[in-house]
Length: 625
Image 1 (cartoon, one colour):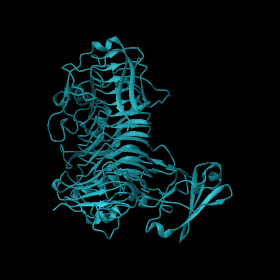
Image 2: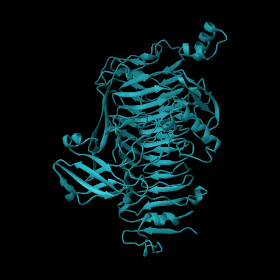
Image 3: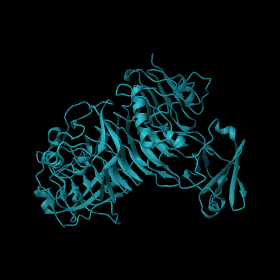
Image 4: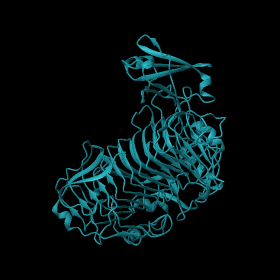
C-alpha cells in the first residue's frame, strides 16, 4: 500500500512521518520511501545529502519526492560559517574536519580526465558564498590581498581554515556558507529506478570534474539508473556538474589521469564496451525526463551524462552562466554536455550566457536537438565524432559562434544561424555507430566530415569579432559533391577497389535546398534553390522584461522561397550508419511544426518561425524563468 511521508522543520526523525508527526530530515524519509510512496517536504532550508534507499521496479511503482505545493523548500550541500575573525585586511575562520565526514572538499582537488589545469596547486571542490554569491578561489596570499571576493584554504589533520577577502563586507553580518557535501540529492548506490524529484531549490554541492571516463557525480541525479523525472526545480551553484545523467565508477574512474598508459579516448571506448557487457541498454539505463528546471551558476555543466543520458528527454529548461568563472577549464564544459545520448530528445530549452550551449559528443545517433534558443554563449552547439542520423531543427543560434561540426550524417532543418560555423573531420579517433534505437554496436569508423543536409535554414552574420576557424554560411563546403552517387563514383573512379584512406581523400556530399543567405553570407556553391542577398539582417536576440525577442530584417526575396516539408523519406540514409532519421519509437519524422509550436504549411516558411513575414520583424521567442 502506497504511503505518504511528510518532512518539516518542526519535525523529529523519531516521528512516524505523518502530516501531524513529520520527520525532521528528508534523509529519514528517503530511508523508508519505497514503491508507490510519496515524500512531501514542507518549507525550510534542509542542509543534507539525500540518498534514497529504494527505487521502483517499474513506472507503476514510481517513488516521488516533492516540495509541498506553494511552499519554498531548499536543499543545500553547504553549512553556515560564523565566528569569522579579522586577520589584517582579510578574514579567517577555522572549522573542525569532522564536519565533512570522509570527504573534505577543501583538500579534494578539482581533477580528472581532460581537465586543463591552469594553476598548481589546483583548485578544490569546496566553495565559499556571501549572501548567495560565490567567491573565486585563489591559491596565493598575494592574490587574495589583491582581488576582492576571493578565498583560499589551508587544511591540517584536524582543521580547515578559510581565508577570505570580502572587500568591504562583514561576513558575520551576512549569510556566509561553505560547501560541505558533494551532492544534494544523489543515491550512493546505482540502479535505483523510477524516482521523481519535483519542485525543490537545490544548491551548493562540491561536485568534482565529470568527464565521460569518471564516476559522474552531480548535485542531483539518478546515479546510472532508469526512468527518473527531474522537474520544476531551481538548481544552482554546483562546483562542477549540476544534474548528472552520467555513468558510475564501475566502468572506470579517471584511469587516464591515474595511469597515463594510453590516451583518454581509449579508456572512454573501453568504458562504453564495459558498460555494454554489464547490461547497458534501453531496458536498463536512461529514459529520464529533465524538464522545466532553472539551472545556473555551475562550473562545468548544467546537465552532464555519458551513456546514462541515452533515450532521455530534456526540455523546457533554462540554463545559464555555466563555465564562465574559468577558475579551471577543460574539454568537458557546456550547459548540456552529453556522451552517447542515443535517441535523446533535447527541445524547447533556453540556453544562454554560457561557455558552450549544447555539446553532443560521441554516439549521438538518433539524437534530436529541436526548438532551442541560444544566445550570448561562447559556442551555441557542438556535435563531435558521431555518424548520424542526428537532427537539428527549428533552433535559433544567435551567438557569435554558432556551430562546431566534427560529425557527419547530420540534418539541419529550419534553423536560424546568425554566427560562424567551424567544420572538420576527425581521422584519428574511430567512433562506434549502432543498430537503430539500440546500444548494440553495428560498426566503428572515422568521421570523414560532410554527408550533411541543410534544408530551409536562414543564415546571417552578426559576428563582432574575427575568428578564422568560424566561418559564416556554407561557403566552406564548396567543392563537395551534392549527390552520394557523384561521391562514390569519384572515389572508385580515382582509386579503384580502395580501402579506408581513399574515403578521407574525397569530400563526402552536402545536400542543400531552400536556404536564405542574408548579410552577403557565402552560400554552398551548389545550393541553387536558395536565396542569396546582401540585405543586412541586423538581427539580434535580446531580453526585455523577462521576455526574449528576436528582431531581424528579411529581404522581399525571402517570400520567393517555396520550401518542401522535410521528413524521413526526404532525408534519406546517412552513408555510414545507414540508419533512418526516425523518432525514438521507430516511427517516421516529419518536421511540420515550428519553434513556437505552430503547424507548418504545405510549403513551410524557411527558418524556425512559420509565417514570419518580410521587412523588419520582431517576435517573442521565449520567456525567462
